[in-house]
Image (cartoon, rainbow, N blue to C red; front, side, top):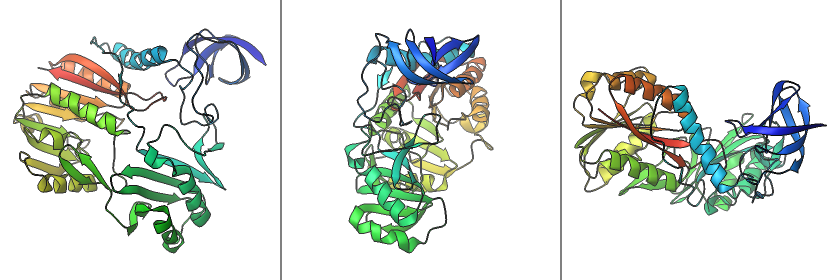
Length: 396
């Protein structure tokens, strides 16, 4: 065993110690702590905290420390909020961008409405941190109450179909379950689970096997039939908060582009007061958005199109008809689209991102193109993890 002092908290939530002149990363430790660790290369396994930090609190989940689903349950609220905000501040500083970064906004709500659990043998849960060991869960307290049975559902699926993964989404009409088995599975092995588990939909590798009630979510005034593998914000609260921040930033705009629109968490709300052009490469998501827009009374015209914005970003000429724009790309960011936005004359642009580093890269492109980054708001929907959502507002 090695005695070490934790000097900092890394971007992945691991404590950093210096041992024999090299950095060692130790999960579940905090700055200022004296610890006993077992060192293997650049990794350290915590054996004991001999001098705890005043920021250390007792985790609320008995699986914490073995389950890799959460990294920060041991970090007190004030230090936790500062850590997540600093992830954004640091990314912007590395890109050479000065901006007002607001305090972290809590968007945990009732918990996460979607999860993916691993199934191995008779166990179901999350892998350990930097480990292939599966922590068998009885429950997961960061999920919404509607997913309280998720581990039991996963074990029932494993008994029928073998090892693999299951994705569960809580919807207004029940649980939407998609099974991804490790080996080929006959659909008839899964079908008997449908009624006993009370599912809304049962899918195998994204293909619907049985449908009792179409899985539906409410977005603004609209009801949306969600695709089997479509993107959703982690919590319902986060979706509403992000949409509010976007709407406030684009207030007064009459013609808005929503790029990387998904099923329309922004578009369907913004369409209550503005004409909307929405684009995304996900065919099923675009179809769900278009159907919801047609079925909802009181919306302004909403055009939803399938378009790969990585390969075919909207050009500055195409962007010329909008007085507001929001883009919410995947973690890779939207470098190509950002360059065309930077060359456009859209007066107000809102960027939503789940990756501070790629947000900072794209923000630098916009700033160099003549935009001013008015402010950034970090949003905490991925509770107790090192992921942070953010909203940046740009003005010409």
